[in-house]
Image 1 (tube, rainbow, N blue to C red):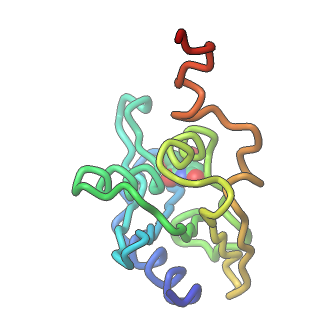
Image 2: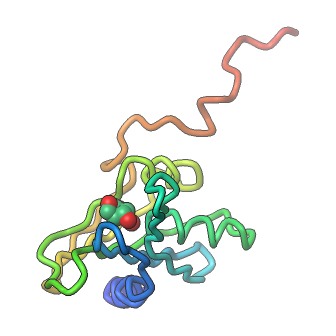
Image 3: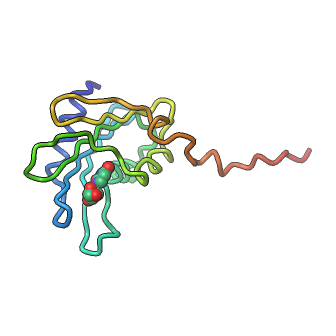
Length: 144
Ligand code: THU
């Protein structure tokens, strides 16, 4: 899928951001391996802790619909009512959620800079040496 289109969809997702506390609005467009798109925005909470980032909203929507294989994600973020001036990098918790479902060698993360420019990273670049499902598999020698 076209990278510019993914970014456009992330902007569309951002329109629904619920951010009465920070005013920082983020949108994410998550692409599955079969070409389906799931949009997510950040959803804040008066108790602060339950706040959900845009990226996780997109992932949880997709996973709850049965999706397990992902290609990439586009993310845009910035203060409401202001021009976006820089890339919005995913937080550590969202990187960890990505690592649960995505191949760090191939899953890409597109960050737009607010001026039509963007950078594309692989998950392994943003979360090197991540802890994932593989780490929970036993590596003890099997008894014969
Ligand atoms: N936020 C996201 O949605 N994604 C990110 O990658 C960074 C932070 C949200 C959480 C909170 O609603 C607001 O931005 C300020 O941290």
